[in-house]
Length: 292
Image 1 (cartoon, rainbow, N blue to C red):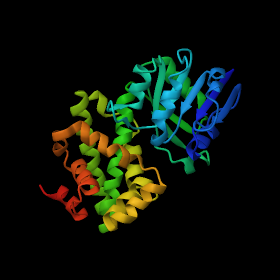
Image 2: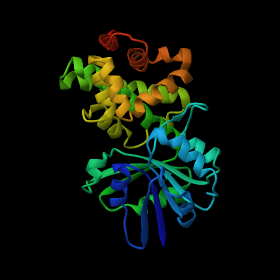
Image 3: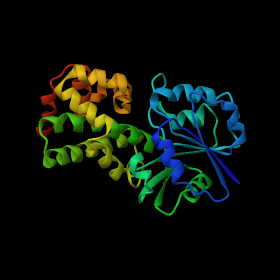
């Protein structure tokens, strides 16, 4: 009997639950803010699908329990400010979780709600963790395998940051050609950044990340894209939007910028997004990416 607990208080948690096979399986959606964490003891598979603003509290509360006999899948993405490491690395190293995997789309919650055909990438060095993940999902979900959780999670984090740039440039030049060229250059820069950080070609190409990157960067309904558009038009409206919405790209941009420090300038697009968002550089300066 598989007993699955999904830690999540949003539509994505519900959408994931709808796409898990129900035969010989118990599934419960757990609100990580209000529910009693003692319930964790009763489940052998845990999905962590919470927004970044809740994540550090969730990780602390999980640290109070023995998780050695549980399989944990993280779909939340981000960096921990004080350590500048991914959630995946923190879970493995600090919570001492041996059976852990990180997974990513391309997948919007509204599409998963309809049991759409799409794909996930599950990243883990543990073959059994990858195999179990593939067995959990219905036939409409194709699952690719990859080894390195922290790499895939960092890429998932960076795509949200670059999506802010998509919103900035599209608000000024709303045509498909400009947006597509920006996304192409941003994706190329992300690959270079990953290679620089991990010093391996193998790390740079988990299957499906291109689709995930494109989906987020081109999605005008995404929160990060919307934030970028507002930053370009009206900073006050952008700040108000941030009070009412969680924008993971915005939250993690300051962390990655601090981590890269002086090397941030080596990544022209990332640096411009940071300076436009936090340093009052004019949004039109993003066009500097077209200068050879």
